[in-house]
Image 1 (cartoon, rainbow, N blue to C red):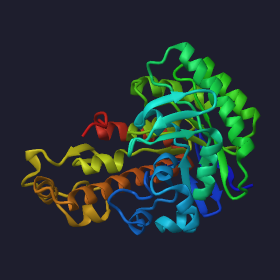
Image 2: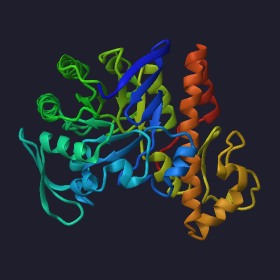
Image 3: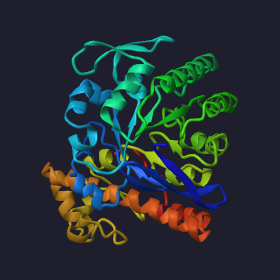
Length: 373
């Protein structure tokens, strides 16, 4: 087995676990910084590791287009290529095909599309998605799935579920790497019956881990959070559960409360590049004039490099002057916030106080962490 997972403690549905991978252990719940193109934007691998990140995410679609999965394989694999010695998860590229590419045609065979880079016509099949990820050499690979939009009708959802199950089976048959775990993805939108059908079929195939896909694609946060407990309960207790592409800090806590172990999202770095900081008392927008003369750190509860050394006034100046250090410092701080939140959630689960911790965080933040900068 390429990975091992055990649940070490529960507190209600919330779980604290340990995931063992070929490149080291991962304590859960875990947030994965997103390194779409083999880099966490604006930060060095050493900085990301110093912040406490263990598992990071890279993207199959982007890396297959540029520089190419065969080139990365020939250069020693993704870990060596990006100088990251910890575990890596690669997503299958399906979501990017459906959201970024143009002239996408989806059939039972796979997806044919034009590259968003140069317009070249390409095909992504379940077998090709697995081949790319084996070439990259990630610790965890994802099956190719069909991710329908939030406004999909039931017939479209049924089609996506049928294809997702069939493609998962094809991915499993093609997958050969003994050093890489292949996770399945449950689809079905907000239709709990379709989610159940999809989960039951995939669980019967006995994958080493399972993800919930098709969330944060246009539904409201309230709709997603209401659906998560039942969706998570469909997945095996003794295997890792991954909520893909989510999300805001309050969504992460809702996911943990529902029994989810793994998360990823671009918000910490993307919003950091746009002058938005996540803090223990809510969101700060550093372009606002109220920060121009403020000598306080971003967050007195944070001991990251940014908060130890720089004031809100300085950060406001960096963004006003369009200096690249501003996005770097806020990306660093935001990742520190997300990773610390996961550690605190884990400690609360071990202490049997997760519900109180969850409620306290929401009170302190005072309002929704608006993902729009």
